[in-house]
Length: 481
Image (tube, rainbow, N blue to C red; front, side):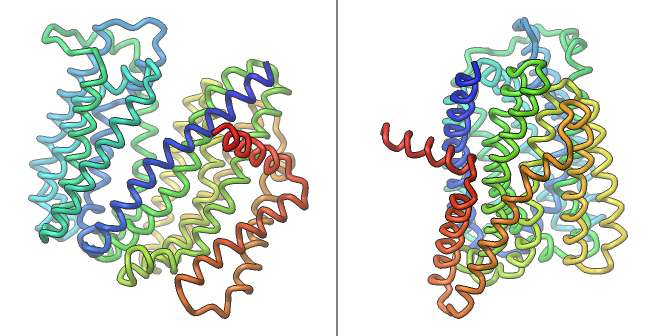
């Protein structure tokens, strides 16, 4: 059983990495091209509205996708109730936001946001039409179909966004890109899902799902608030340019840590559920996952911080260089986000959604208070404290993990700190080795190569089992191909 679980986990991590990698690559390509054409003000205009769309999307979905997936027995009436409920909520929310657009514009002191908001918010209305279809594919493990749908949506919307940007449509091209993505995604979901809504419906099936789904909805809303906190505060107290520069940096940071979090998260919760109630085995499996996450996250995200100025300048030109300095700070915090995701997956696997929800809410409130207090002192100070709070909150997550599987803080630190230390040592050495290089292309290439060689070499010298197992599995997969 142990060997079976180990192999299943390795395969899950491998294929999840490939799927997420393809998605991130498309996002990266289209993002680079669009960023070269548009400016920080264009991205700032969209950034100031993103929080409203995300919260509305969470309210319309209301956690029912996971609730439908968790039902032991499911009927047409369940999907139908969710479909009509989501559609009704989305139309209601759109009408509210449509008439509130002038208030949003007054908050940011920008009248151009009124027509843009009313156009961009159409996205979550369209999105509601695919929630039940998405839940059907998710419940029936139709991963291939969901991947095709997502990639198709990214490809078509990316092309549309680039064409509109070239035609001088500025921030309208970004808004349209988002709407086209959702539309193509939904068309694909409807084509892959055999389920269809009917006009005869009842909301009674929702009663059995509300207790579970409501907690997820609240948690998702606070996660969106946490992730978009800076866009709101910068839009209010600074300008569209600062919002645009931050959003650009945050996009690169998100691509990095979400790739790792998604790869680990795709197998973590199912794996924890399969381990059973054996606390010793639970702890052993969790520590193995913790070491793997730290092994990947620290060199990747700290390395991203290290090469940020060169990466931003080469890919999206020097006009975005201020975002590189923001990215350097964000990426340090991003190194710890996959670890936080692993901790939260364990908590959820134990059925403790209350802990997950209140942890997220408390963190969000703490961050909001800190950012409001620090808003007069500049973006750099705000970012530094924001990252410090997120890293420090890991100790709170660990307390709850300790209560579940009795993993001591010292044991967790022994699993995490060596990888962080070795990554920092490799980066520090690469910094001094490459200090004399002036050509930007040679500099970034040398930084990456030297850091990777040093990190891998130090892993080998230190006898890291995680490194050797990962290398062995990759070589085996390559050999098979």
